[in-house]
Image (cartoon, rainbow, N blue to C red; front, side):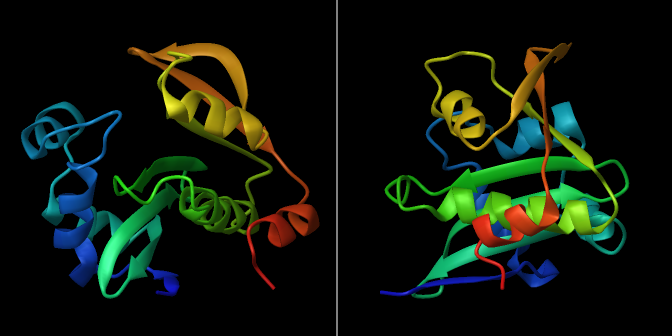
Length: 160
């Protein structure tokens, strides 16, 4: 079945939250999202009315991946892919969409937080795509940064 990539809407938040708590690595509960990060469906809907934007991937109407960023500070906030859909390029394409949007919003350098454990898939995933560790930590996570040429990046993300 074809994968459909599109901009995330507030109406997608229940499916997005369901997917986020189903991930294999960096698993998190709804309670942890709220208590540790202040993220709830209501707070995310409010953020999406401002500087936060996301894209998702669907297969047969089921959300199988999503990514979000914050243009106010250049952060890639999350990239998540449903178990069983990893390794199909979904995360890479979603990340590319967020990166391009952040660069087009005027950020020359963008950043994200990632698990520093080299046995976690995200560790290699981000590095293979050009993300560089800064040596900075925020809590347990490491800060990664990326600077890219817009023209090169647009072609890498699948944008036309």
